[in-house]
Length: 485
Image (cartoon, rainbow, N blue to C red; front, side, top):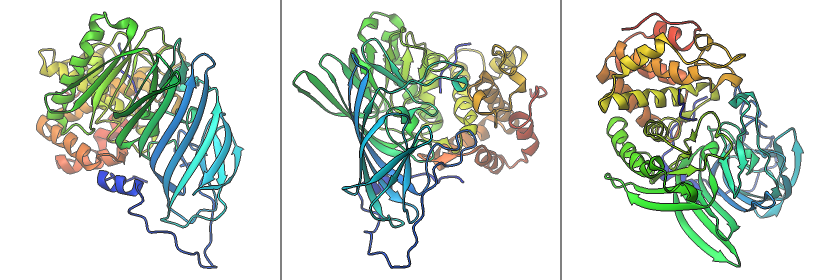
């Protein structure tokens, strides 16, 4: 999630995803035999931490989010078009949408019945059942004031759709994408995105991927962004504000776009952020394999924005968001997430240590490669004096990082013990084997989802070692492990 200052879904083939989005892969629905049975899709994917998030019975190929937002009223008007494929014979299906007013729903061009059930369920019943493997289109019109979330998950800090002085900052991890658009809101259902946002003249919108259109009409500006690689819903963004924008190309040829709150243009760390981003994008590709997306960049917000989750950043896909002022290792952390978390995403939210542990480990590895202490020395210091959370949060060594519980999923132990576990594994199987493991993990699961158990199995295969006892100690058991050096 953030840089801290102190049933598996197979990887997707991008070309296939794009074809599915265009309706080229799924056969056309044929007339249903009289004995075909239809059933509702599950109202949740059964994630241990968020059992009601996500929905069963379909797979999203593409979202087109078309919204208009007025900061003076905090009012959002939206039309979301979803192209999906039925994975069963569907009589009805759900989308996740928190509290916003639904004005109409259409399925395959025809009005559909809908109902609100629970806190964030939009239950949709099309006029006709949807055959398994058929493509279908859902259009939801909605409006309202997006409600910011808070609570113990992110330590009572606000997150979701954050209303700022001149626009909005969107921080959707882990469960807040549905506060601003209807979705299948779980990382297991990645999709391509088009994000089209209209705002009053003078404001800009910075989104994921490439800016493909900007138009001005009658005192309003519309920005259209397109992310053409699979993306989890919580990584989608559309930051609204007064930004200075610059563009460049990294040494490896990756297009880069950086946006900064106009009031921050003179801050030296802000001015340095594009260079740090370029360097991290290219250099980490040398360690981990090709950069997984078609663009890179950054968004730097003013520091009077409510805290962005834990401390200061979020790895929004292709263009991380930072609260001013960023620092270099924070940029390294968030760019590393483009591989760990964005390209290879969690299969369940309890696997989040794979995202955050690897990003924290990358910070220490970066320092090792750039004249700082070795990663081993850095983690020895953390082992001796780990960062603690204020009570009543559990103490550092009491957190089971492979299953920390929902309310502790961003505890500092997830980051620091997670990174330490990876350094201990590097020491145990050897540096070259560890780098081979990391690259294979990223290549095998590119644009897909994976779990802790998947990682453990791959580590044993790559190393040729029985690592059951190691992983039990480091990932599945509370308490301070014995020294490993």
